[in-house]
Image (cartoon, rainbow, N blue to C red):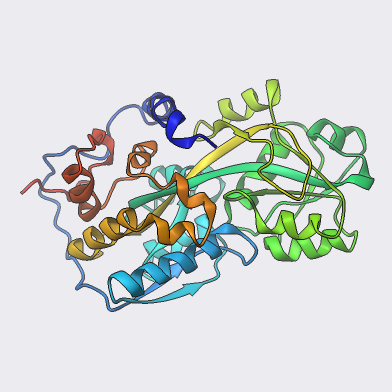
Length: 348
């Protein structure tokens, strides 16, 4: 996906978006203040929150577990969750140690806005490392004749799989459908469950967001002829205007080897790993260091890890970084934006 070649342009775009959306720096600068945090002892066991089985989060979580156990001698338990929104709540409440989120839920949690966090900030989360882009795309049974969002409207498709409640797609796809004037009843389920329903002919269309390629798409395509499509033009412009944490994205031809498709224009959010602000600083530093120095291990888990380069941390300006992560990125010469320094950060 030529990620490294386009990273700087993406960073510039995200910076402009969040400067406008957030109204400048509200989370503190590199000098810090007197906010005190009682940091935890370094853990010997961690719980990793992912998403539903059949999605990339769950697979990626397995790779993180291997990394923790082989490089840091920390036992990892990978758990199925509802996805980013669920992971934010679990981290905020101290019920999980490491979670995965996308930019949209992260922005809304920190600011206490959106359908899931309206008036209820979850601002104890801290980003520690970048992961990969999560493009949104839809796939339909070829027999349905659907090959675009407009086709869904024209053919009266009134049910579509959208992913689990609390996941990125389950949160935003219903809102996107409504914004575009689509009368679609969302079917909330994990990627694997939706794939099974589609194979059985119970769902003509599924929309989902995950790292590419999505295993559930390949699972359906192994048994049924499917058509992939995204969102572009005026529809895409309207979505990005309403939800500024989305960015344009192109799913390149050949991404799905068992499906004939060209380039697919769509939208995406980037993914990040998060912890609670009280997580042990030395542990976070060692984890982030091991994460970037052993990217080959993660690549054996899923190809989306090719996007997990250190510079991708700059694609987040909405959620503060953990001080342990700040230490690592500053050490390797990355100039972080002021907005990611948390109130508790102290430049000792």
